Amino acid sequence: MQFSILDISTVATVIIALVSMLIKQWSSDRKMFAMLKTMETRQDFFQSTIDKICQHLEDSIKDHAVLMDRTKGEK
Image 1: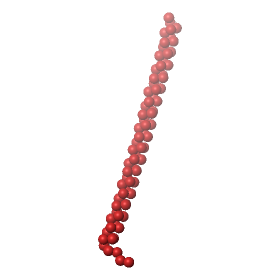
Image 2: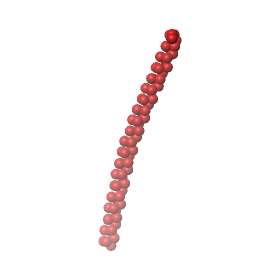
Image 3: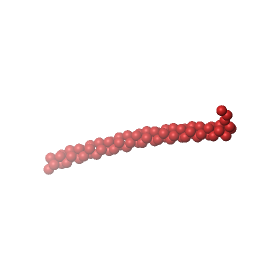
Image 4: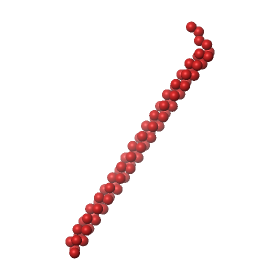
């Protein structure tokens, strides 16, 4: 069985193209994973910020209710 230079060149080109595609896909997957990780981190940050704001509002409402009760008691 004899291979010509053209056959070897074609096979080599196909192999290089496949490896290149695999590397690009791997790189893309890593970027996507990093982006998702960043999104999770951002989501955690925003969720903790929202939780803090809600807690502050709840505390303010309770303080206001206590103040209103005191004001009613003084009348």
